[in-house]
Length: 416
Image: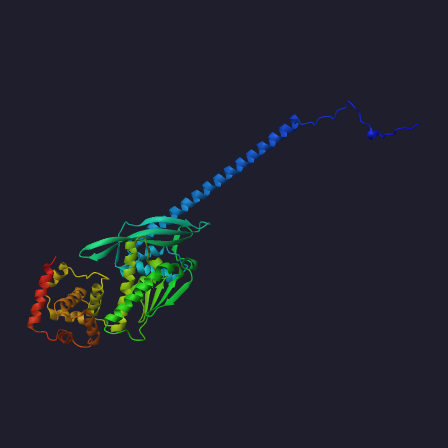
């Protein structure tokens, strides 16, 4: 007789089902979940409200800074327009005294807003703020401004061009002050050379300078060819496209062989093709004039400057300045050809510049003397009396030539 042994764990109890899992959430646990969701919603809402208020405060502070910067800009514009260097200086940063002194000199001489190097005349009331870029700490700002200028295209006609200029402001105790841009604004100094030119410029103006350099090189090569022979082997010009505002001052233009010019970003970036062409032409005029001066030599005579102006006018780089009104003044004063002695040695007189230009126009158009020959003759014979120089240029000055002058003056005075 055998027995079938089973442990208690091995016995299958029939009729007994396993209890079902309890999936129901107790009221207490449900209440805790909703409480957590509520807390999260309140926290998120609080964060969003705080962020919104912070953004509003930042926007309000930024708007206030923008208004302060533009207020300083307006004061500087008005001071420059009135040539009030004393007021202008109170809105200048003292970070760079040399930069500040140059700015005040520009204001006092009327060059801060004007661009005479490019033949541009500033149009009052034309300034427009394009943008204001604030530093993250609101302690500095870059103001981008569009300025409008008129450009003389001759025959009493002008066209308008617009240049974009950047001004840097830094916060002082109670206002924003105009300040020199940091070195990072301009980028590293660069240079390259061509056959006739060595060009120094800031990296910021690389894209503008490269095509300009090709145009300037061609202009100098043309001067050499027109001078009668190739330029001397040692003929070379160094161009410094300076970031200093002193580059706008006539006295800072440079010594022989060195021409200091304002960098394009300092003068103002053109906003259209017309402005670009005007800037290119202005640089070309300055470089062509420097090349002619180096080839011909220098002279203090008004006739020297008039001959240079005539060459530049013949090249289409600037309009010839004399109008019938100028000739009418010469006719009314009964100015004779012999009266040119007052402009021969650079003597100042009320109409010295216009009289010199009139004599050059007469010699070129009526007597057939080339403007380049005139320029060279002024330098060559500048130690001689005016009458001897005039006789050498015209071969002889007699009653017929004197009468031809009077007739030429009368014709120009009545022409339209």
